[in-house]
Structures are given as C-alpha cells and as structure tokens.
Image 1 (cartoon, rainbow, N blue to C red):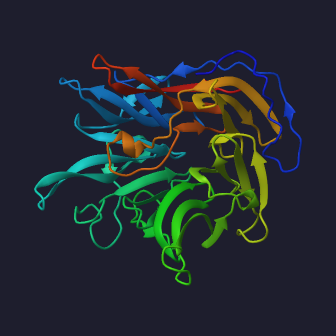
Image 2 (cartoon, rainbow, N blue to C red):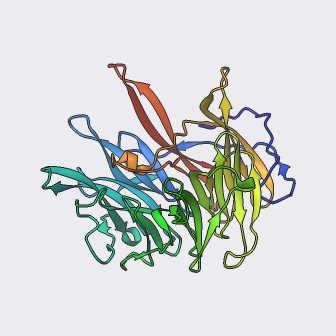
Image 3 (cartoon, rainbow, N blue to C red):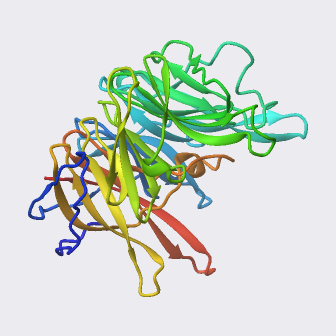
Length: 391
C-alpha cells in the first residue's frame, strides 16, 4: 500500500541519459482494492482503458482455494473460468479485448498411473467470457505428458494481438502472429533454453535464454543471456559496466527500450538502440528496482528499505520516473513478492514476477502479498490486487 508521508529520498538518476530530472511535489495516490471472488486476487496486466486481468480465488466447500482467470472492467469482476475446477490465470490483454492466459489441467500419465499438471494456453477472443485453447505448434503434441514438463506457457500479448510464449520446459520460444494461427518457433542460434518475457507494440520481443558455446570447455560452455529480437535480428542485452547478468525482472516499452535489474536492492538500467538493433547501445542507470514500464517509457521504480539489522524489508520507497525526465514520489509500497503466475497454479516451473502493471494513463496495478498465521501456526500467503491513478 502507499503511504502519504513525505519521503526524504530523492531520485537523481533518470531514464534520460545524462539528463538531470526535476522532482515534483508528491501527488496523491489513493489505492483501490480490486473486487474479488471471495479468496484473494492477483493482477497481471492493465490496459490503457483501465481494464485489468489476472486471477481471483474461489473457495470450495472443502476450503480449498481454486484460482480462476478474471477480468476487471468498470469496477466489476468477471469470472473467465467456465468450470468451477478450472485453475487458470489471465496474463495479458490486447487493444481489442483479446485476453490470453494459461490453465493447469490434469492429463493422465500411464507410467506411472497418475494425473500430471499440464500448462494449457488459452485465449478469450474479443471480449468472450469462455476461453478456447490457443493453436498449438505443428509437430508432436506439446501437451503430451511424455515430455519433461509438458505444456505451453503464454507470457505476453501486445496491443495489435501478437502473442509470445514458450514450451513449459523452456526448450523453445514461440510467437503467434494472431490468436487464430499456429505459433512459429523463434530461432535463437545456440540456445539450450529459451523463455519469452515480453512483446511490445511494434513487435520487438524480449527473451531470456541459455546459450551454448561449443568452443568453450565443458562446464563453461553455457551462460544466460537476455536477447532482443527486432525485425528478425537478435541483439544481446549487456548490463552497464559488464555487471552480473540481470535478474529475471525485465520490461520492454514500445520504443524498444529494455529495462532490467542488476541488483534489486541497488541498481537497475535501461538499454536502448535505434533502427534494427545495430550500433552501440545507450545505457543508463536507474536508482532502484524496475517494477513496471508502460508503452511510452514511464518507469515505476522502488528501492527496498533496510530494517535496523540491515536486512531488506518487504516495504519499499516508490517513485515514477517519467519519460519526459521528471520524477514523482509516492511514499512507500509494501507486500511485493517475486512469484510468477505459474507458482499460483501449482505448476512445477516458473519465474520471478512481481505482478505490477503500469498503463499509458499512468494507472498502476499491483499485487500485495500478506503473510498471515493460521491457527496451526503455519504461514499462509494471501494476495490482494490494487489499482491507483498516478498523477
């Protein structure tokens, strides 16, 4: 949640390279809780028209919480999961109202005889409340349990409706040109693993991969890489001063600027280049952790607050760095927790994701995670989604 008290920390490094910013007076930000289905909420994406998507918990008669994909629109929540037993989460929406997501559906595995959770890609076409399965790649059925981690994960959809995702075992990345066509593999030379991160409005794709170099000794021949795919050309994103590989908290705006975190407690960076991705990139440091980026390049930033013992608390100071070169401060935010939608579904794979979204109208949506104690003294994690109009 945001606090109204004035923070003494001023953000001095901005998105603009070598440009000093102007810090404006702290505006108001009244957080509004998104409606629920009775057992928690989680937000994943926020459209420029104020619609949001994510998941909401529904408590069964036995007390078990089942997560349903949902849409928030005009102050109301719409359940997008047609079956009470459907565990699903919506991960993105396009300009025309197309929503994409993923469901966990059990598939019978004969050896051993058991049901295995399979990630099934879904699409709700142009405002439909009932999903259909996204077209699958040509070739062997990726939902067959014969694979290591069968299924397909949808990661993002852009305004025009292009979709990116990857096989659930990260063996390859996929691009759907639209929600009705089969996906094509994104060819990444030397990639051992590939996970899609984002696709922007003009079709640039941000990937994370593990690349193998056969010229290096065994044990040193694989290394992680962040890649930008633009018009078929693949460019490797290198953090400033060749620091450690960025953490998997990355974002991409509609101009093709990549934002990433080197250290969530210290530094983040922006990386940009012009044209087809060639030429020397421009790199700028950002003073905090990147939470979210909108299409025009505004950046929601946070810096964790250290407690008396020097340990990182789950409360952060929060600010918005504008593409125009100014910074707004909004006090504090707490309850951020790096856990992706896959973990929510109980799937045996996933990545870090803070569930924070920022649209071009500077509305911010985020998920607050609260640890509570049950009567058995065991920890219980509750999630609640909020939205706030930044000014």
